[in-house]
Length: 114
Length: 113
Image 1 (cartoon, one colour):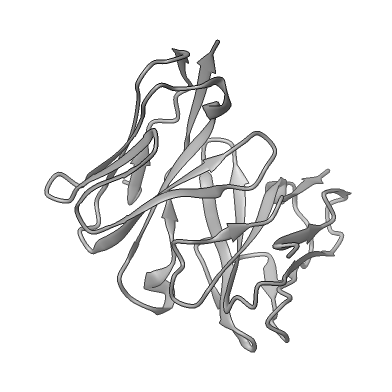
Image 2 (cartoon, helix red, strand yellow):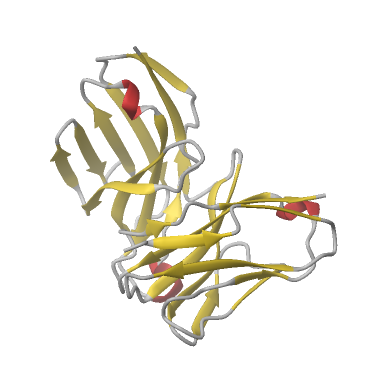
């Protein structure tokens, strides 16, 4: 079992829909949780990050972490065609050295149709 | 700031050839890393560096070498290219221990025939 599992999709929604993207993980030592967005043929860019449990909101985006269930989510409200991209979850432990490296999910490809 | 730059953008190699993928950053970041991205596999860490003169292996280091002689540059060397190394390669950097905020380059698309 991989440490981080993410449904690769693809996910297709109409413009204005609420989108829910999810990852599960197996390592309870993970403390930092991130979402990266990757447009086609581009490098990933950091969208949001959360430390430990809880919610974080930034505009139309909300990141949730449930450490008891080892489950993280990204919600996109009022989705736009410009949100069409691949979304990768990533996480890491709160240590240095190799344990501080990011572990990525496989990414979910999202398409928002006008 | 140019951010993280990678050259070349595209490369085709024959099996057994060697080459170096270049990566440079102008943000004075201590941490730099190389990933490969394959369909259905996500991003996998090849090698990383926490500072000039310090490198270490990631998840998939076989067939690759790295060195870090300066803070700015982190080249990735393919020693003897194999078709299994056909992939998109991304270089990333971040400031110190804050590795969650990694800045990625635009990628190099490598095909090995």
